[in-house]
Length: 528
Image (cartoon, rainbow, N blue to C red; front, side, top):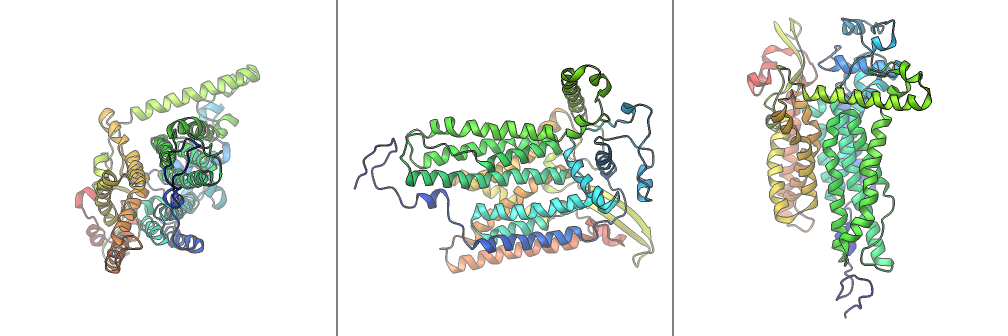
């Protein structure tokens, strides 16, 4: 029987009862297991990351900058210069390593990254002291939480708790994520906020579509559709991506997620058969989306600089000159000094071309051709052999990284064939973390390192997870296919576990014979 059209919605038959299932597919498995499974995997990853976290008792790689800057922020709200051999003094228990200057601005340290990541490191130092455990614990906490977030977002994307746990397990077993979760560098915090922002937008997609279906089923219909409200999950995404920029400016690459989210909105309105879906999208979704994509990240980023604005010890602060001119000019001069500081930093990053023995080009990152040796110390007669090695190598788990290459190629084919939003979202996240670096490599010949790729890792894992779902098949697939697919997916997870176990000694500074360390250098000179 035909339905009379009073609303602007094109209908010639009764409303399909499956519209909710099409727009918001039901989640398989109970809510309890949906939390217990990911939590279990996150705890497993946390145990790996927290075990012997204070070892090596050394300042490894760029911890020499961020550990001291973080401690300075906690004490003085700004980064200060420090004495020569400060690292040795700190490891000996002396934290009085910052220079004492006659004038405030003489002690200010010129730093080239925003402060949020260092504030997060500093919280650990405030709680547990200025020692290796204290400056690494924040990274371990954030690394563990990212496993939980990825497991939950993978579950939401696949509607499968099992696949969500598979994703969390792979992230827990990745070597690069593991090493950065045990090191006081900024990149693990960047990865966390990027992943959190992506997860918030995936949740917002479900919530917005649920509201759209509720309207469709109960309210008088209009050609454009309804306004879907404030959308707190989208605002949370803006906060997270603003926080990513407040850790490292490369977080701005991932603002492309908001374009992805707007396309999801337009697609949802079109899927309902609204007569004017794009008009509704432009008038009802885009304006509030701009608040989340522009205003919230901007406020978050500025808020991360509160210490610099509130104190008088930051680089380029010009405090005395600003305070002498009255409240209004104080604000104006402060903002001007802050902008000039940012222009200085922009120039630094554009001119960062100095050679480094562990630098690498972005094309080589997926192949793990040039890992970064965060720490190496040769020792004698302490490991059952004459020559011993203690190393921390920043490298991904090859089984996961090479498997992800195949999975990403499969996702490209899948997206071209089906336009599945999940494949598109994963490919976009991977591309946002990888492709912009080619511009800087070609234009500026910028110095870059493999660990810059860590924001790509969650999307590599999601690619593997989506392909695992394709192998296992839907619930209605034949038992043989599901059995064979599950066996293949389980075997891959087991290989990843074995691979991490094999690499574990050179990821955690375990003292082993030199011959065993050398055997783990899979690409020989490229890994040394």
